[in-house]
Amino acid sequence: MKNKFAISTFIFSFFLLQTSCNELEKLKDVLFDVNLQQEFTVATDTSKFQGSELIDPTSNKDFNDNKDKISNLEISRISYQILWLDTTEGAASRLVHGDIDFERFDGTNRTALAKMHDVDLKSAYITNTETPIAMEAGAADKLTQVFSLAPYKARIIYSAEANQPNANFRILFRYKMRLKSKL
Image (cartoon, rainbow, N blue to C red; front, side, top):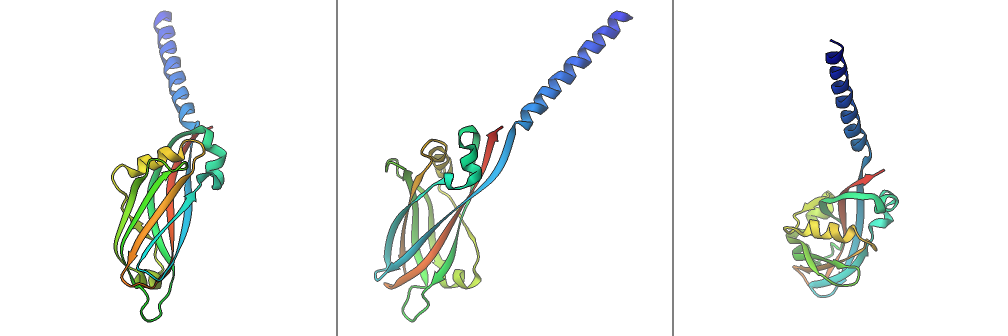
């Protein structure tokens, strides 16, 4: 009887210890939602535009404080919002085509991130809505690889073509990421 009780107690204690260790491991992971923003001003007297800007996730406090402890990083969404639009007669009112590419901080490994087609700039500006952009297959994973290694920065290249030669607008891109960090 004592042996059965001792064995039962041992098995129960082992199970409790195992469960507690697993629960403690889960508590070591902390999730953060990281939002980055990037604004491009398009001001051209032709219908085509190209610009590039660095995007630096370390500008976000949660990312910067945890960058050395990242166990998982994923980009969940990219969206755009038209902040300003020249609505004078003859100004562009549609974005015929837009490409969003990125490359590493050092200018290597250029990759297509997303494409935009037939965007009604005037409607997007008037409704002031944030619109999601479909990412190219595998691009989010490649961008997270860039954001996961020092110096953590990427160059975003935005190329667009409008329906009129006089294109003047400001577009804001938002990158929403989920960061899992070890305590």
